[in-house]
Length: 386
Image 1: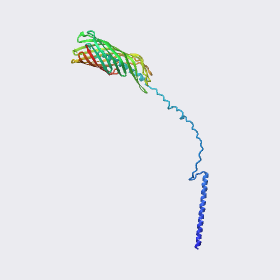
Image 2 (image 1 turned 135 degrees about the vertical axis):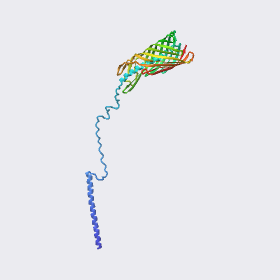
Image 3 (image 1 turned 45 degrees about the vertical axis):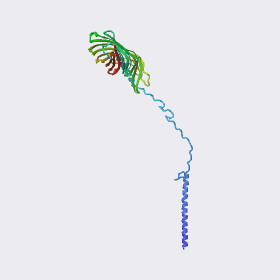
């Protein structure tokens, strides 16, 4: 009985094993068939085995068609070509600068006259003994000699010669010799209070001149300095009254009339890097007339110190500029020169180092609006009375 049950158990196990094998075999075949079908149909398997993709056949891509502005062709505004320079403006400013030249030349006439009056004893008393003085000045460099000589009891000669350099307000004068002389008639036989008269001249026949013309443009300022030659001439007459109020004091008052001329040779602007509105100045003569009302006082302190102060109001009239300029962008420009008034002053302090020998410190200048302006010229001199 036991043997029969064992046989049945073995048989059942064998049948079960056979059925399992049959199931596995059936399940594997469809899977293999599915894998083969997937490979043939070109659909990827979930985890395909590596197979190198076929190497593509090289075929060059078509060349791009040129753009309207190809990089190899210059652009409409190539960087290698400079951009056009804008046209500057400023012709009006250039034309107005000619008026600045007229002001410089007016100042030149007045300064030349102030320096020349030193040679005519402007800082000395009206009546004194014969003398000669050597001097030098700064502010405007000047060196020379001047003096006076009594020709008769009433008539004296005043004269001097100097070599000067000076500059003011944009111009510069060099190598300028100044000569001056005058005759003074003093009515000494009238007593201690009496009239006197002067007539004289100041001459600067030749000098080197440099004038600076400045103006503005839309591209920046322009300044041009040019060189030329000039000459100055002046004549004057003076009428006054002097009084010896004490043995130590002399007072005097006077009126003067002057006529000044200044001849300037023609020139053109010097070449500079940027001067779009250049100018050419023709040869011309500046002129002005002056009236001066002034006075002076001379006083002796002790026996060794002598002082003088002088001054007066000056008014110009009938002034005329000799400038005729041809300016690019403006054509012919003729500036006007207005009339002007200013104050002139002077002074001297003398130290008698021994009998007949005096060391002088002096100064002269102007006070007023431009173009005359405020100026001062000072110096030292050694005066010998004989």
